[in-house]
Length: 137
Image 1 (cartoon, one colour):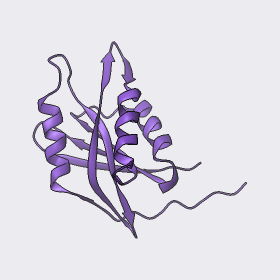
Image 2 (image 1 turned 120 degrees about the vertical axis):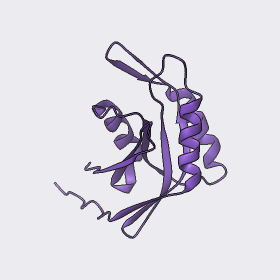
Image 3 (image 1 turned 135 degrees about the horizontal axis):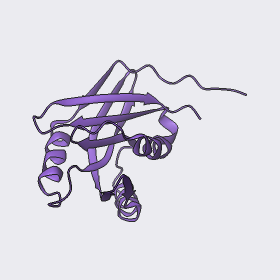
Image 4 (image 1 turned 30 degrees about the horizontal axis):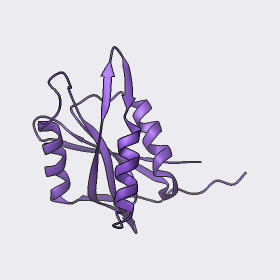
């Protein structure tokens, strides 16, 4: 059984428009929605992840369950591939809920080939946290 060594990540660079897009998405959330999520698109250059774009993702969280609206996300991703969008590198969320194993699993699988997946967390005080984790297939 062969295993691939995940790349060493020393830093993450986030384009300022990415943060603005996340904040805009958060400001347009539904009245009962506590947070928003979306895909992060960019490149892995040497040991730096460069996040350049986002795609908001519709999701519903009710009574301990979460559902991701993959149809619109898939459509947006296919459309953006036509204009050469960078590959999926991870996901973002607003708020401080850190117990998101199911979302981590979904996005790790979707990230596929890069070997890493990134979670960017932006809370209400504009504190930004970043978690990277390896995709070991």
